[in-house]
Length: 309
Image (cartoon, rainbow, N blue to C red; front, side, top):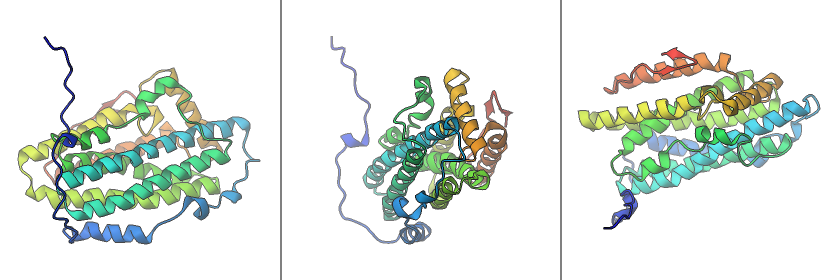
């Protein structure tokens, strides 16, 4: 009797037929974002004034904490780079509107430069760190599962983008906007502001696409969207993917929170639980309210450090 384990079926197991190739405008509001993104390109090597960074005001402890913080940011952005090709494959497989494919060619570039900017910030602080100092923390920051979802034919493109963009990226954008406001170091603030300007378009893409698609979806399809967003918030965001204070309470997450606090106190780009918590809650509440118009009903969430919200 065979004991072989069957691999899950993915879209890569299905025949691929990309022709005829359609490049016409199907969703004008997304094509508009594509053209805007091509006009707003920036280069981390030359468009951030790295020479303006002065390490003198910071202690060795603060610089080491900030190295860890910006390295963590780079890991997160690197994950976004790798998810984009998987989503491009899915867009082609499902013969989605060409506007999605065009926008994501630019989105891939944007995530790459975000990772490079974070890497360079860590470098000028003393050196990029390749993996979490606390190994137990890897479970919170390693992945949010989008690459796997993108190749799973049982999960719709609409569900993936609602969870990734209208959920996770909306939270990330609000945090970056907060960081721009509170970061005192001019170079760190410039990095945060540059990333935030790209994130505006990323978020707009998700809402514009779902607003286009929801009217054509039935109740069962909308429930798939709903479940994907709930999973992203409960299993990813509330597990500490973007914020260490949300991670499970253990010595590893406590160490990362200490890193964040030292970086925040130095004004080098991080924030802390007491400042970020109301922003996180407000973002989730806003997302819940906006999605209600689609027939997507997000439940009350719960977290030990927040309570019900």
